Amino acid sequence: MSTTMSKLTLNTEGDTHVVVTRHFDAPPEAVYRAHTDPALIQKWLLGPDGWTMPVCINDARPGGKFRYEWVNGKGDGFHITGEYIALDPFSRIVHVERMHLPDPTPENHIETRFDPDGGGTLMTMRMTLPDAETRAMMLKTGMEHGMEMSYVRLESIL
Amino acid sequence: MSTLDSAFSALSDPTRRAILARLALGEATVLELAKPFQMTQPAISRHLKVLESAGLIVRRADGTRRPSRLAKPGLDAVDLWLNMLREALTRNYDRLDQVLADIKPENGGTIR
Picture 1 (cartoon, rainbow over the protein chains, first blue to last red):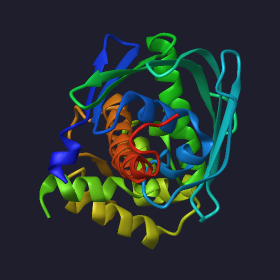
Picture 2: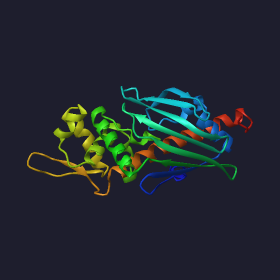
Picture 3: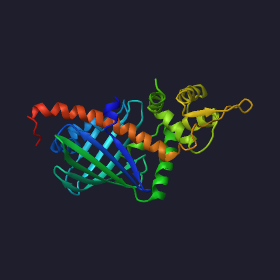
Picture 4: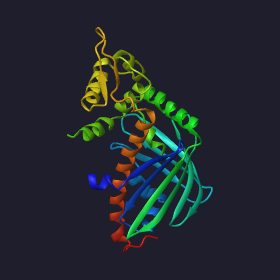
């Protein structure tokens, strides 16, 4: 729906940043929990239709690790690993992650903020890739993988 | 379907996204595309037809070859990646809206 899609903004900043904003009709506590509770994450962090997340391991505390595994039921799959750097319930999460294709991509540093917005929440997610060269390399790696595996999930660096 | 809808629909298939990613590196024939994908040429041709209908690629005649290239020169790898990211995030957050709506009543609006 166009009304739903229009809620999302996605912009690049310089060569290494991507900034995403989205409003949710729920308080920051709920949105924060949906980003840290594995049982809730498995319900929505799935990307394009057809994918599921059979493995969702998540230790949501500073220094804690997480691992998300996705499959599409057609023999394709990949996973992401990451570590939490900082968690400020219910306003901010800072973490790093990399995608395994199966070789790991360079690290993506992500700060996610949950700010009160009317009766709901404005989420602001700011991704920082190491540098423009690394980002170019990451894209190239993803493409080569896509050619080998008949699929590309470049978007799933999220 | 609008052009945008058909473009999104075309981009929803992982093989077609991979084909676009390959074409971002330069023009390619069906034969050249089929090999790395380990798919038959008819299967690749079907995907190319969808991409062509969506206005994402154009094909030119070169004797018996019909090499494909990206329709828009500006449609580079970063744009492709951002489009895929936008598509994935849109799907994710639409689902998250539903998750949030579902958990609200159970917890009386307060989540702890």
